Every structure is written in structure tokens, then in C-alpha cells.
Image (cartoon, rainbow, N blue to C red; front, side, top):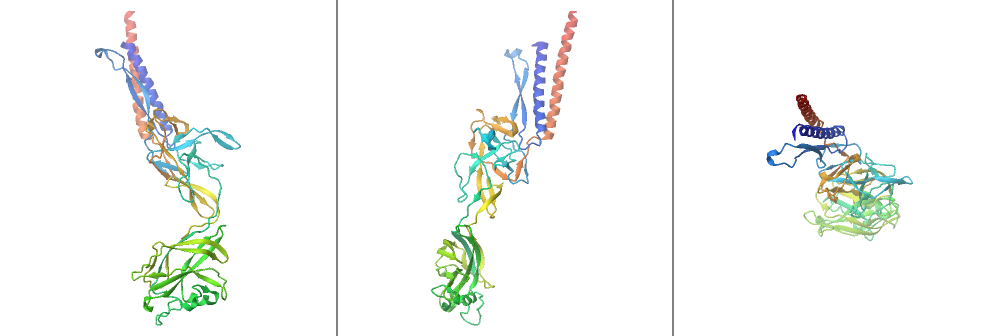
Length: 449
């Protein structure tokens, strides 16, 4: 090739190093850009078709090498809807193509990003700092199951969460083997027991309420809700009706207050209708996992059929305080509420906080992966578009979503400065080749003169 070939080769070297410098500059410029993926430079030699004895080193061409699978450092953030992906995967997003009546419209083209600085806009969409709208699948608020398999644009507004009537009370407690009722006297046998005369048809009337209170112990209280979401306070009490010392088995009855204003023959405390019989080990014998209270009514409010769920949580072990130790007392109803705010959990779900104090899973964020992630096409704002080389998106990436977090740039400034020095030296060396070639041409022309 000679002198002119050397000069041409050096020009390709200048061009390649200029290309590398542009990538270095872009990496440094985006060293603080959320979830930015640096672009490295690959150099490839170009060899002319010559016999082996005539081959030369050849010229050079530069190309980009993506680092889409190299994760940046994850840092905590103060915004609940910010999120980062730890591991494999991309958020599925869309970009609006237009707007109508103040609402964005979409063309159905999906993009992919690691940039997780999503926040709610005025319309309830989750939008990141580059203007991409998050996609996912809604979650059934009752069952927690995902609705559908195809992701769509997520939107959360101040929707009303309808009230839910209580259908189950979760109740677990340890009853003392000897209850310290107001009437108990350790010197008087059976004084700790609920006298049969205090009950009428198994229940407690208004006339016997004082005696009942003196012969029983508190079982706690829980607020339940009717079909309209109105709160109702349910008071519980335990009465021990028989004991081993009395020649029988340790037996208890559970009561709930049905009418706080009951007088005379009116029923004030109703028996749930089950004998809780304990064996010598302090366990129920036979076991009682749940009791259904039919047509439950408290102070005139009809609650319908309510399941009192115990599991294996009702026991009778010695308690020096003589009181019932409540280990669990909850229920599944709630009042109506409006959505106040949303955040992202570490389970990868959008969680809504409501005015009634509930937090409910609203949607699950979809993560996509690619067989050729480094062959995705880069777009503005840290987004990517699939290509033939990357292959189609595969939903269900294994990466873990971290709420209130952000992924940083994977460009290291110190490393980029090192590349910058090397690039500068290589560029200068190529200019030296051109200068030398030019001098040799000048020498040749001078010889001809």
C-alpha cells in the first residue's frame, strides 16, 4: 500500500479514536443519569485481500458495545413510587403519541427501560423522568391474584374502595385454668365458675347481667363492620361452666354482647353455642377450629353470619393473673375509603393507601427480559426498543424490584478518564503517522526536483 496507504490507515485510526472519544464523552456526561448504561467502544481491524506474504496490519473501524446487562449501584430514595431492578429485567413502558381531552393517547408500541423514577401525574399515571408510562397488571384486591397476563398502562386515581362487611373474626387466646373473676374466692369451691342459674337458655338476660359480669372474665373487644361499612364494637367474655375440681371437665362458654341496654328478660349477652372443653394438656378436646355465629346482631345492627376462626389458638394453660391472654383478635371487614397515595413494595407491587387505614395491592409491575439484551436499540431517556438481534420481549424476568430505590449509572468516571487518556494518546499517535507520511511524501517530491 505504501505511504498513501499508511496515511489512509492513520485517518481511519483518527476516525475510530474520535468515535471512542464520543462514547467516553457520553458516558461521562451521563455519569449521574438514572439507570444509564454506558457504551464501550470495540475496535475491529480491516484487512485487504492479499497473499500472506503481502498482508499488512490493515486499517481500523470502531463500533459500540452495549452494557445493558451491567447493573448500576442501587441507592435509597425518599419517593415511594421510585423503584430499582436488582438483577435481570426491564420495566415495560409506553410513550404517548398524542393527547385528547387532557388525557394521553398511546400507539400500542412497547418500550423497555431500567429508569425507575416513576411518579404519579395529575391523571394518576406512573410516569418516569423521561416521560415513559409504566405498564403492569391489575391485582384483585380481595384475592390478591393477578388479573390478566398482558400488561397495560397503569392508572390510579382517587377511586372509592367499597365497604366490606365482616364475615370472619380471627380469635386466639389462652384461658387461665383458674379464672380470677370478681366473684372468685380460692377458699370457696367453684366460686370461679359461671353459675347455671345466671343463664337463661344458655344466654344472659338484662336481669342477670351483673351476676354474669362478676362470674366471667373479659375476652377482649373488636370493631367489626356491617354491609354499609358502619363500625360495630363487639365485646367478648368467657365464663367457665365446669371444672375437673368439680368432678367434670374444664369447660368454657364464650359470649358476645348483643344488647348493651338489655333489661329484664331481654338477652344482653349471647352464647356462641359451643362448649370449649379442655383436656389435661391444656388443649381443646375435641378441637374447635371455628364456630359460625348465625344472624349475629349487636346493639340493633345486623351483621349476618360471622365465622369465629380459632385454628389451634384456643388453649388453657396456667396463668398467675387469672385473665384471658388475647393472642389474636382481628377481622376481615372495613369501612369505605378513598385512595390517598401509592407506593411500590419490594414484592414488585403497587400498593394503595386508603383513607380508612388499609393498604391494598393494586397492581403488579411487569418485568421483561431478552435473549440478546445488549442488542436492544437505544432511545432517548434511557429507553430501549427491541430488534431482530435482541429477540422478542419475554415477560417474567427474574429480577427483584426494590421500592423507594433508584439504580444509578453504570458509568464510572475514573474508568472513563482512563479511557480518555488512552484515546488521546492513540489519537496523537495516529496524527504522528500522518505527519511522518506527509514528510516522506515531501522528501520524495524534493528528490524529483
